[in-house]
Length: 226
Length: 226
DNA sequence: TAAAGTTAACGTTTGTTAACGTTGATAATG
DNA sequence: CATTATCAACGTTAACAAACGTTAACTTTA
Image (cartoon, protein in one colour):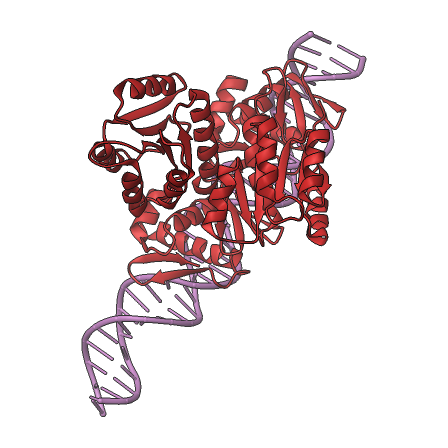
């Protein structure tokens, strides 16, 4: 199972396609580019991408039509439409043809990535218990290791326990006291200092994906986001 | 913060309604059942559901009519129509009345659930606290950052809380006292001074889009506009 | 006796307090 | 009636203390 997410991008404006492709590649997506609807559909059949981004207006075969044919074969792969028209009708049509989201041009890369991650997120995080995906790391609590791009980083027991607690409560604040009670079984001053040290250690070991952050909420606790 | 998703189901065929209700409940949805259009609309007003599933043909008030009235009050809640007729015309009408998707009877529960999840996923991402567009900034309350043109600006917890409150009440005045009570849990003189400081900090961090303004209404409170 | 975890020391960040400047509404004055 | 005085509300900056981050020395554990 490769960690890179494979994106099929169907876009006839080559300059735009290039920009999107490069932006996505810097974020560790693999991008397959079809220059028109037919080519895109061919690539879909051959490459089995994880997510599809379709321009609506394209030569040979429009985006809606591609989506319709894709859905005959695969009901799950997320589809995002890019549309220059802003009419509601288009948007509605997109959903009717099996799209999951749409973006009006012009759009920012941030927006596209957010939407993609949202659609992927629902599928992605269903990995099993002894492997947890976190950003573009894989975390194996039982083995006490973090894997990034096939490179293994060993974790100690305390590091593992702390990271697991943070991941189990991803995007939520965990009170300092709660962490201390669970992992150190003790909320005194020195345990607090110790926790700080381990937070530092984890931040260092997670530095290869900058989207992962362990955020401190002063006087409350910590929150892991990605 | 993952409370049950609340579904309003409007369906006059009681046997079918019961099947849908039970299926959804086993999947951890909470279901409110209206036996006709009027009852359904009443429930909508009282219960503020997360998603609405409307049979089109119902006594007293049909599904389209319910959708039309719902949309007067709430433009975001996803609406799915159930229709026995298979004409495209109906479908188009459904979208015209503000529906987001439709299912032809007979349909499988799997299909209904997939459609529901698809719509909920999208909405979650728009209204949910993950990403909020504000002017040409993107605000990520969970990550405590503001992004402008790919440039990241870190926010502290207080800054995040205050900005989120302002954005949630965009274009409306929030009373000083309300802000102080919610964020500082305290309305004394010093908290007031502290709030002033944070208003200044936010204004500075939002300076890259001059259309965004935090306006003071003397002796009342603040209003964020953009 | 290495490796893991804790303690200690010190640097950095965050939120509060304080001091003072600016603005706007109302009242007093010529 | 226009001008000025006054005062409270708000804005801005900086100083400060507490919380947190980081590094390294030290102690414990397997």
